[in-house]
Image (cartoon, rainbow, N blue to C red; front, top):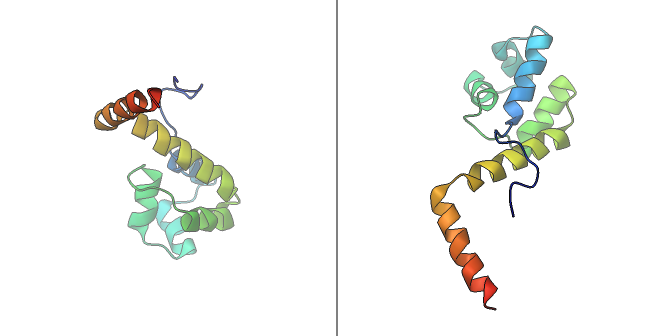
Length: 103
């Protein structure tokens, strides 16, 4: 099925958030404080160590005016592209395709 036209390196929504706050000269600590989140949560999202949730996407939307749907779309693409690289999952998918081919 291929990679369906996606790039080789998935983009985590934290990259978009990081670019936005750098452009606005807002620190991660200030953003976290304004959003009522722990600094570690914001930092981990920005550094792609924590996934964005619908709740945090809405919070970033309120704080930065970045549409939550756009952030969640990036997160979904990131999750799928990351899963496609998982070698154990690749083997499971291969086996499922074999079974499905004979049905």
